[in-house]
Every structure is written in C-alpha cells, then in structure tokens.
Image 1: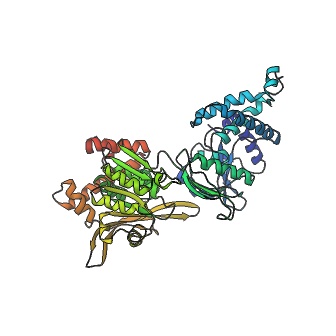
Image 2: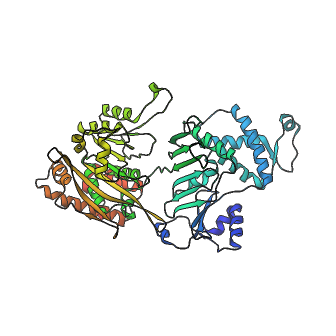
Length: 539
C-alpha cells in the first residue's frame, strides 16, 4: 500500500493529508518502521495500524516529535446522531445475550445499528414509527458512525489507536491533558488524543476497570490489573491522590515478545552473554533479572525462556499475566484479589502451589514480598527459579532479600546462581536498554561475613560494548554446568560457550529473530541436539 491508495480507501486520511499539506511537506508513507529511523533528525512519516487508523509522527514547532492518530472524525451533526444511535443501542443491548468475545460484540452492534437507523432520505414505514423513532443515517457517514460505535462499545474507546500501535510500550494519561506514549523507536511523544471532559474520563476509567474485574471506587482509588489483550494497566482514580486529575498508565502486552537474537541485535546483550545464559537456563540455574522500572526486565525474562529445554515442565506465577512461555507443558497461575481474605489468592500461595506440582522451572513475574522466601525454598529443594526484581546492584539485591518483608536468611542466598542487571538509557530521544552486568553468586562465607559474588559480564557505557570478564574464571560454568554436561576437563566448557555464541550471531545475521522462528530452532535443538540445527547456524 502507498499513500495515494491509503487516501483513496480512507477519505478521512485524504482530508487529513490535504489539510496538513497546505503548510507542511507531504508525509512519507511506510508500512513498517525500522530501528534506523530513531536517528532521523527530521521525521514526517505515516504508518498504518489497522484500517481505518493511521499514525503520523512529525517534528513539532518546538522541535520535539509529535504523535497524531488519524481516524474517522465526525461533524457536530454526526456526533449528535451518534449519541442518539448509541443511546438506543444501549437500551436494546440488555435484551440480547451477553458475550465477551469482541467479534460477537461487533456483530451484535451491526445488528442493533440496523434496528435503530434507516437510510437518510427514505421514508419510515408505519411499523417503524410504531416501534419508536429511528435515526436517519446517510451512506457517506454510516462507516464512520459504526466505527465510532464499535470503538467505544467493543474496543478501547479513545485510546484504540494507541492500543493497536505495535510500536508503543507505554500509554500515560493524566486528567484532561494530551495523552503521552513511549514509542519503541522515537521515545516519549505527546499525542493529539485527550479526554474532552471529566465525565468522559470518569466513564472510561470506570468501565475499563470493570472490564479488568477490578472496579475502581472512591474508597479504592488505586487498582492494578490486566486488559483483555494482556496489557497491564494501573489506575489512580481519586483527585485526592492524583492532583492532576484521574490518571492511568498502560504497559502494552505483546503476545509474541522479542527474542534473545532480537535483543542481541538491539545491543541489550552481546552474543556471548546470550550463549552464557543459554547454558545456564538449559542446565537449571536459578537467576533474577533486576533493574529499575521500564529497564526491560520482563522482556529479557521472556526472551530467555526459549533456552530452556522444550520438554521441561514450567509453572509461572504472576499478579498480571506478562510471562509468555513457548513450552507445551506450561501451567499459568494468576493471583486473585477480593475483599474476602479467605477467597484471596496471593503470589505466595501460587508459589507454594507450584512447588507441590513438582515443576522443573518456576517463573515468578516479580518478587516483592514473602513469595521471595518461598522462591528460595524452591531453589533449596532443587527447582530452578527465574524471576524479576527491583534492585540496582547485587549488594542492594542481597540487602532487600534479607530484609523485610522477604526475610531470606543470608546463608541461603547462594541458592540463587545468577543476578542479571539492566538499565534504561535515553540517548538523543532514543530509548536504549542494556544489560549492565551479570553477577555469579558463589557462596555464603561466614568467615568473610557475607555472600561472595563474581562479575562475569560488564557493560562499558562509553563504547557501548559488553565485556566477558569470566573467561577461564567462571564459577557457574566450571563448577555447576560442566559437571552436568559430563565434561572431563571443566575448561572445555568455554569451547561450548563459543560454539553457542557463533550460533546466536548466525541467527542475527540470517535474520532469524521472530518469536516462532527462534522457538522452532530451539525446539529442534531440544529434540535432536546440534545435528538438528540448520547447518548455516552451526558456525
């Protein structure tokens, strides 16, 4: 599709481009964005996110980049008819069966729309007049009005364009201000979308929280839950708490998350780091991915799971569903909130339940409280545990684990094998994420009065390079994994590390970075070993 065809098929797009082009250059139409666009000083591009919505990103008057959603718009007269149609549909809707499926809801809206409208210019029958007043709708406005109905009643409402955009990470709204987004390529951007009134914002927040099953109220002004598509939403409802007005933040969920070869391409990890993690995950090491908010912890956790043998049994425990596991034997456990204590299911309960089911790996979305002590009990009994955590260094991580409310005895900390640390960096408007260090947990030493650790990988922020400081000096590789592999000489593990590094590099070079592609490769490896891997990837 090109710009001319997009405008021909979408009159609202044509109107927008013509209006903009009177005093600005015509934007470039692209079907997909790429990472190189982040370095552009001047941006003026339009891309589709699913008919009839397009996104326009361009340099604003002050030099910063702006984000405009292009979707059908209605005149004041059309808005009046939309309100009439919506009121009648909502009045009739309770007489129809309830269904949570979006497609069925949209089909039902189409059926109800036909019942409450008639073509403008035609005459109503006596039966129509007896049933009540129908709304006259012209052929040229029917598509726009039905789009708005479906958008507001069955989809994401005002933020539907943002929910559809695959290049967004976060959506943030405060009161009646313009909504802001975090774009994967262009960073923080202000959008042209905003709620028109407190009533509209209130209705959106209340209805959305109810869809999540965690209704917000004045008595319970802060809620955290998952949208139907899996995106994580935090709502702050009361003006007493949020002085700028009711607010919400949505962390976008992607059904097929980025893979480790993709993270290597982005520079988050080096190929050798990926190879090291592959060995650790395949041979049952326990690790925590730690870092500040939005540093990419969950993305890294999801990417690493492909390294686990596909025949293993996986259990995951989370507050909101963010972990995506490619294995066939995967039990997904989610907490449940309720006003009744006896009906509440907490993360601690889920981890204990997982232990009784004897999984090979237990994945905890994020450790914040007493579930951390259950995680260490799981490690002590031979289960591999993988989780995320908030700490900026290994010393602070140990400090948090051994203090309230987790309270893990310091002599048990060495049941964890690895701590991986991530950072988020803003570079000339771009958002970069880097693994800043990987630390091996060696042992607790009573004589030294603490836990002995060793930095195995370091990131140099000046050169933006990762360095392997553990060559012939890795405790985990030589003393934990080499014996499991049956290696007579523990130093031979580094030859295996290099072989896996070559394969990761080959996957990046051959553009094997998609979720299904990557998991097909590792599934073949799990089933048939190195001989099952395509020759061009074996290095």
